[in-house]
Image (tube, one colour):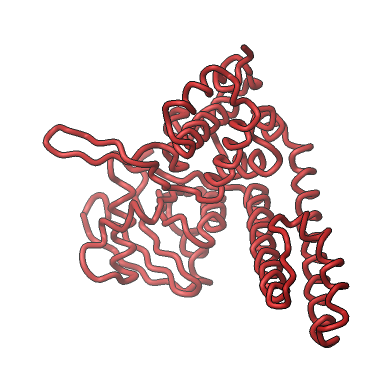
Length: 340
C-alpha cells in the first residue's frame, strides 16, 4: 500500500503539516493546535508521517502508529539542507516532507516507553555526576585558599576531607566551616541518589536478556549495556556493525577531491553519551588486555588515543553483532582480547 507522505513540524503548541496530494499534486499546508493533532489523524486515511527526532517525537510517533499511520523519524541534520531560505514552521515542514523521500534517507528507530525510561535514568545520573563534580571542585578550591590541598579522585577526597576540615578548626571562622560541612553533606546526598539510580539500572540489566548478552563483552558493563540496548532499539535498523559504529561516530571522517580521499579523525557524530561510554570501555580493555599480541602491536605503532578509538569501534561492532544475530558473545571473535 502506498501512503501519502506528510511532513510534520512538531512543537509545544503549534504544529505545521505539509503534504502533496498524490493525484492532483496540490500542496496542502495545515496549521494545528496541539489538542487538534490526534483528532486530525484519526480522521485521515493511513499515511506516512515524517518528523524530526527531537523532543517528544517518540511519544508522537507511538501515538500516530497506534492510529494506523506509518511514522518515520529523521535526524535534524538530514533535514537542515532542505530548508532553502528562511527557517519557519512552514519551511521546516516542507523540508521534512522532502527529506523523508530521499533515496538515501536514514531514519531513527522509534523508542518504546521502557527504552526512553532507561535513557532518562542515564541522563539523570549524568546530571547528578556533573553536580557532584562542581560541588567537590568548589570545596577543593575554597580549602586550597586556606592551605589544604585535597586529592583529585572522589574516593580519596571523601577520606581526606574530614581531616582537612578538622585541621581548620583553629584558624577558620566557624560559619565558613559549617557551610563547608553542609556542602559536603549535599555531596554525600548526591552520592546516595547516584547509587539509587545505578541500583535501578542493575535491575534492568538483571531482567533484560539483551543487556545481559552484551554485558558479557569485555569493556561493556552496567552503564554501557543498558544505554546501548535502549539507544539502539531494533538492531536490524543498521545493516552492519560498521554502520552502527558510524552512527555512534567512531569511524573516520572523509574529505576528498579529484578522486583522492583523505581519512581524518573520528566523525563524533551521533549519541555523545554512548560514544563516551564505549571510549571508556575501550580504555578498560586496553588496560587489562594490553599484553595480547594484536593490541600490543597496535599500541607500538599508533598513538594511544588512536588505539582507544579503534578498540571502541571494535566494541561497537561486537555489540551490534550480539544484538542483531541473537547469539551469545564469542571471545574468540574479538581478536583484541583473544587468548594467546
